[in-house]
Length: 142
Image (cartoon, rainbow, N blue to C red; front, side, top):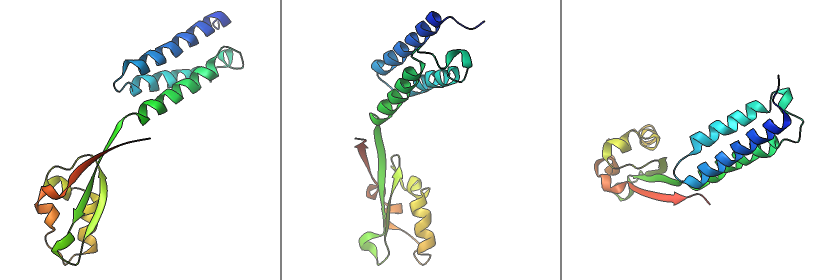
């Protein structure tokens, strides 16, 4: 037996309130909001819940918008890796996700592997020896 329209509206309203509370709580609550969004999406695939003015579409859209807002507020950490530079005619640069704090971390990046393939004659890259060359930068999404 399907839920009554009043029970459907109350359930959806409580899920919307839960999403709002998670968003207001701060921290990274995206996993919980995503679970609510998936639940609402699943509910919308059941015929007794669809096609009625129970607020399900608005709740689903609201949870999806909350996920976007929460993601946009997170800091983005990336590192610009510079290899070569003044040390010779060959140099490579690129951005990698996360913070590179030592030479071994730089050597694990795609930028370093590409440099090795692009310039096989270069045996040692200065930035891969001196971690001070790889400087972490932080940005924020607009």
